[in-house]
Structures are given as C-alpha cells and as structure tokens.
Image 1 (cartoon, rainbow, N blue to C red):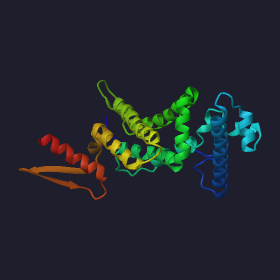
Image 2 (tube, helix red, strand yellow):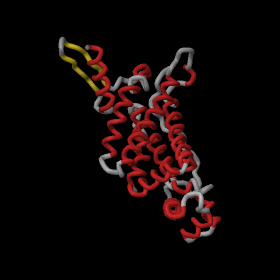
Image 3 (tube, rainbow, N blue to C red):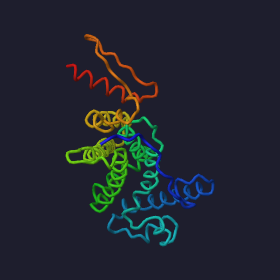
Image 4 (spheres, rainbow, N blue to C red):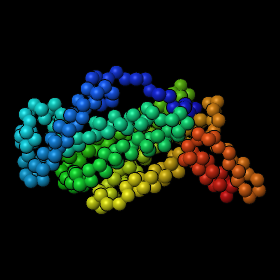
Length: 273
C-alpha cells in the first residue's frame, strides 16, 4: 500500500455560525457562543464543588449563570457535558491543523501537531483544568463523558492517517491500516499520559516539552512505518544516507522536515551497528 502525499480535504459547507467561518459576524457569533459555554461551565463547576454533582440540577446551573433553562440546552445536552465547554472548538482547530499540513510532512508528525491543540486548551486555564481533573476522578459519569470526548480526537486522527494510504491497494498481509489505527491511538495515549501527569502535579512544569518527549517515543516506534511508501510515489525521499567507511553522509531536501531527516539518519546508524 502506497503512501499518498497530503492533499487538502474538500471544503465542507459551513453554516453562518460555524467555528471555522471567516466572516466578522460569524466570528463574533462563535466567540459569543464559546463565552456562554464557558460561563455555564464555570457555574456548573462551582455548584458541583459546593453542592455535589448528583445534587446539582440543570435549572440551578442555568440560574447561576443568569440564563434560562432552554439556553443551557442550546449549548449542552446534559450537565455532564457542561464541564467540557471547549472540546467542540478544539476539535475544529485540530482538524484545521490536519487540513493545512505541508505536502511533505510525515502524517504522524501532523497528527502530533494536531493534538497539541488539546493540550493548549487545558494549559490556557490551568486552575480550571486541575479542578476539572479532580472532579472527573470523583464522578464516574463525568469520567465517561471525558472518555467519549477523547474518542472523537482518536477517530479524527485515525481517519487522517488512513487517508494517506491507497485504499485500493489493500491486500492480505498488508498491515498499514492496522499501523495507522495503532499509531493514532498511541499519539492520543501519549498526550493523555503527559496531560494527566501534569494535572496531578497541579499544572506545574513545562508540559509542552514533556509532550514533545512523549511524541518522540511514538515517532521512534511508529514513524518508520507510517508513510514508508512515500519514495515510490515519484517524489524524492526527504533524505538519503550513504556510508563512506565509518562516516555517514546525509543529503536532504531543503524543505524536508527535520524530524524526517533525523529519523532517516537514526535508522541508518542502527542498521550500521
């Protein structure tokens, strides 16, 4: 199965208030929508902390936010959803990263960049994120809602990785579809591991560098397989390595991603040893 270079996805029709719409009116509507979702979430979090999750009603959350019950249900389907106000918008941003990926970027690197939007969402409000984490640990229903949110990202990244291979070339013994799904799951798992560790530490420390380290492990494990067929599509490989005695000589395209170059060099060194 051959790797297919990134191609922009077909434009999806958007309603006037869709998060990705670029008109000033649509941007204002999206900002107002997110503001209201966050206000409802803040009211819910405060009530959950003071009254307890089970004892808090939707009517009380709406009243605390100064809106009607029907307004609450325009933004959330249930009180469980109310503590995750940013996931819908973050999913849109993550998808935008995938759609705008450079043509020669390894798709696994693109996915790693995409999920960083999730980490930035949590890092934007550390105190709220820590309180939310503690609450989800105490309330199984909220934990299940969080797991459902995470699954949406995993599905997005799996579709993206699978989309970089020729579906018509599937044959028995071809492991690329399996590799794409496992790699997408690994990226999400690495992200969640680092996120949980950071939240348990009270949101202290350089979470982005911790995330980059975790992604490096994922790339070393799966990166050589994802996109392995790119050199057979008529494009030049990102880098080539030749041996001259005990010396390795690497030649790379000027537009080649550094991660791809380093992977090629590391692979050559391992084969040499």
